[in-house]
Amino acid sequence: MTEIVLRVPESIAVLLHLSSEELGWKLQMAAAAKLFEMGELSSGAAAQLAGVPRTVFLSRLADYGIDTFRLTEEELEREVRLA
Figure 1 (tube, rainbow, N blue to C red):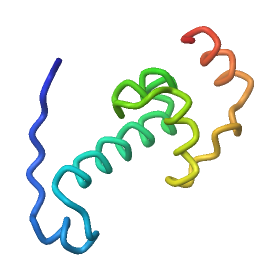
Figure 2 (figure 1 turned 30 degrees about the vertical axis):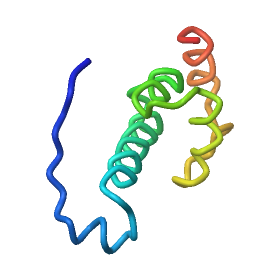
Figure 3 (figure 1 turned 90 degrees about the vertical axis):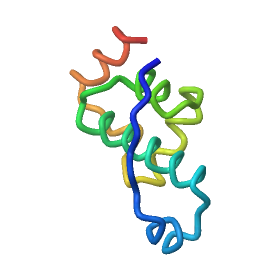
């Protein structure tokens, strides 16, 4: 597994009222959601990046303003192929 270190000022965690661990998870989930939204990752791959089951990932997309079921026919076909 590749490990990426992201340096974040402590003030960000304080502003968001999050522990370091919670902030790390939030950033990981946000990155996965954005890559999914951009079509760079399938929902399964994005869920793997986020470290959660696919069903949990899909259910959390609304928290990031991403409509889970707003896929074009092409995107839906791609999801089926990648499943």
